Length: 554
Image (tube, rainbow, N blue to C red; front, side):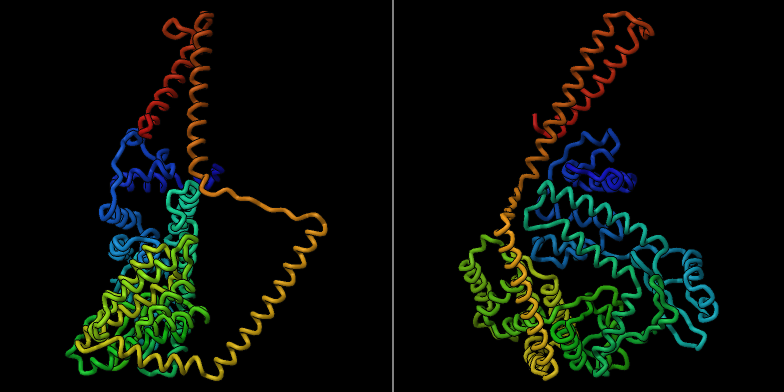
């Protein structure tokens, strides 16, 4: 294997910490698979544990990610949305990950703020609460009062958090490459691709300017709806590491129930807002739980925490809208076709069996009044079905499910008679209005013409290149081996052990010959160089025996 040596050993202490946490939490089998033994104290290298499975493996995975800290917690939270590649038992466990850590001392925060904001800190801020209102792994928030008397919230990044997360991402990339080269997962799970997706997501979350832009975009999308808002941003006081926003004065949506005078209105408003974000705007709050939504002035929903948002292309927006329609109206053929269009099906997918299984799944609800069906349960069944058939879906697919599930749960808490199906049917009219808006039709026609012209040009260019290569006798076919990485790895292990055995033999023979010479210097009346040779042979022999016993192949 072609290791990048400086990268592999650059963060030795962190690698050692990861290996010991894996061992402590009963996941020691991963250590040998990822070549982490070298980072453990020698006495711990020979321990051999049974590999857990099922729920126990899921629980221990969650515990390891929680203990490893911010970057791994965020990775686990990302994976908890990927019901297409992880079994349901893992999804449920990873959803329990808590992004709550002790706050940084205010002295450190204040020092960081003065360095970040310079003169603006003293000239614009009158008062700041030393006790944070919330403390998460990446940032913590403090209430403050500005010079003009406005009450605001300041979100400040933890000092050194970016450096620590960068180290962990570098380690993740290295371990993902090893896992993929050795085919430690099925080909269905692509660790390098997952870490690359995570790297993009965490990069945006670490840059508060991105969050500021997200708030501006959300505000613009709902400028025509006075009942939906986001906090005003003080851009002159905000940087990539500090975000100052209006303090939302209101009640968290999760604390409101059916006794609220506008409970029915709020239930429908929240559901339609989420549907509009996903299916019309193509830009949505990726963490719309009740703690991130406030009720202001009894009839206004204010969204906060825009660190993670999702974006959907025009094409996927249309497909997701059709999917939504199919779910609402129980259109099985439409539903299965859209899943296959949106997703990435394996080459050996049995499409007939796929449709039969989908029909069987939805037959559980056949004859039931749609108003009596809990859509969260239906979504969980569909997610399990997709996982069983090994179809990779875009993350937005599951975010749509989660958005509707959250809306249904919050809506029922606000109004026991709330029905997401009725709201969805009403919302389909808004989707149709959006799709048949003359401005949007023109945009789609122009986009289609451009894509057609581009495809036509690419096809002509590729055909020309192919013909030129054939004429010039320069046409070559490249073959690529598949799934030989594990065999190559085992072959490496065998050849390495054989090489060590030959070295041991050479040391013993050479040392024996040196001892026969009776040359100086001597130790214990034995030639020193012969003695050293025997010691080296003994150490290497002991290491070889231990590695063989540890592998279990003897």
